[in-house]
Image 1 (spheres, helix red, strand yellow):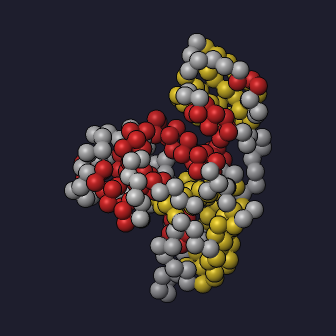
Image 2 (cartoon, one colour):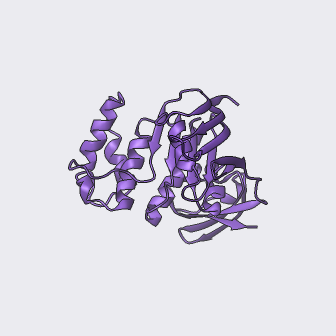
Image 3 (cartoon, one colour):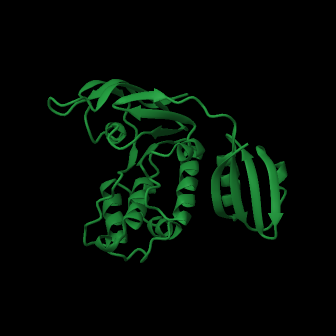
Length: 268
């Protein structure tokens, strides 16, 4: 696989304090979703900032400089401007000429107050939606998300999962952090754990299925690769999808106009 960015023995230390990162090795291939587990203070946010070229490593080497979209763990939403004005301003800074995707993206994320909502009036979850829109607007090669599901409402959780799948589908990569193992395993191709500045790969979980609930006309979902069970209840379709096939099934559903009501891991 082609590598987008690679960290080789990367360390990070502030002043003479304890090392925040210690000899981290990480390769991010194109078209992969990488999830990083870790508690607060483990170093995972520092790792993401180095991947996003917002912080410099103290030691080691970073190889590669992909176009990055970055969502911090807490979006700075104290500005007086509206969500639309902010996104237009940031898009122009990024050199984006076509700004027509801004409002449809905010509509998809169901931003409370709509595009004209002043950023300083938004809740943490709605500010997170604006930050996510900024991160994905220019279709980056590498989408970096720090605790992206934190504070989002249920509907936005589903949309975020769709965005992660779509990013992978177009050949770009995603690196995200979360402190919940179930959430990381549900969305990531490769899972790592950050603990006291050390990054280790987590062994793949036992075969896991994903429960996907759709709304729309019933079709022959049982013939879709990876779908082990399809139950139609009127316009509500409940799918059980084997590990590794959930992204493809979600994309087919979206492309055919289905509404995605639920995506959740379930043990088989």
